[in-house]
Image (tube, rainbow, N blue to C red; front, side):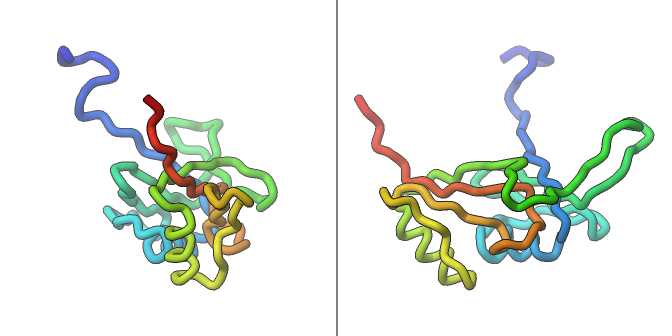
Length: 141
């Protein structure tokens, strides 16, 4: 790909998640999800790498000089999803067992046992959404 084109090699996407409790989020992403801590900034943001994806966990913040009409706000209702992502795994039940061993609550499984609902802090309102763990379907040919 020629230099200067967009998109091009070397670019990466970072998902920004606004949370109300950075310590609970740190515990979830490090100890339960197993994300690799990359960097922290002043107790208000944490950068993780998880399976090649970048996650920037930030606390709420008001407008800035370059964005005077923008505010980062944490979710305020655990029943309304503001952000969601999916982790595709070979065996959803096995992963759920491992996650359950790391936390007090097991993820909720669908009746088909191929999708589970993993709430980032077991009911605490400190994450911006919902994480679905899904079994990977074999490729159809």
